[in-house]
Length: 251
Ligand SMILES: Nc1ncnc2c1ncn2[C@@H]1O[C@H](COP(=O)(O)OP(=O)(O)OP(=O)(O)O)[C@@H](O)[C@H]1O
Image (tube, rainbow, N blue to C red; front, side, top):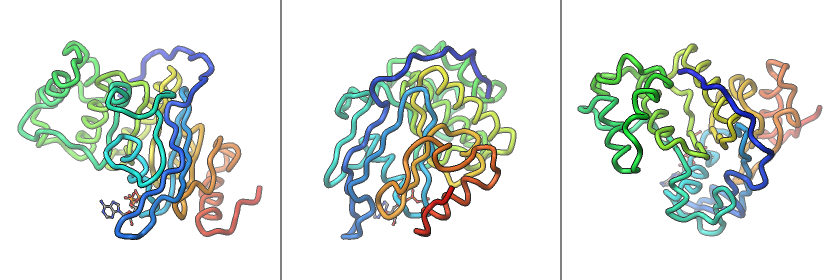
């Protein structure tokens, strides 16, 4: 994965993603409880939380894949509707593609569906580190290569808002570093990048803002520095544990 030369974006006036008052239950079990979340252009937002806290549910609602009982979603200041999808790139619930088609053909199918120029595919494959594997059947890819293809799918339309559910899963250390550089570069060029993850050390390196989901709401939302010293290797770990165990954060 490679980065492009970043341009400095103007200060944002509207959030890339704004969730307000989301409530969602499954079989009478309340998963989200009046959840508010705000992610800004030009920043990487890390959505953290224990297993089953509702991170994937939150991101699915943000993408219009699931409806909340109550609450609203706005993309770049506009109430969510189909037209918002043109501005969003996403990878959620793991990589999904046609296994018999090459990586290039998979992206070409997606390009036809979204009206995207086919010329972007080869540079994009190089950008995600699949420059030499574009003509290989996606079904034969390693786990990390599938993750890279899923990322390419998410980036195909050059979206302003990027929503990725646990994108580091399956990547080797080099892949994790390249992903970090790529997402930081996208944020630096003005995109809103929202990432859910359990990898606290990596999020401490990558994120500008952090949301810690616990008991259906954000126990913390704000700049990483407001929660932990980014230079303290275990700072985010300690703060996270204090929040999700209810002990509170002492700084
Ligand atoms: N379609 C569904 N039907 C029933 N229950 C669901 C459904 N989707 C999610 N849940 C439940 O909602 C809760 C939150 O799930 P979700 O996958 O959003 O959590 P998560 O924070 O992403 O978890 P993890 O970190 O383990 O991926 C869990 O108890 C899960 O079992």
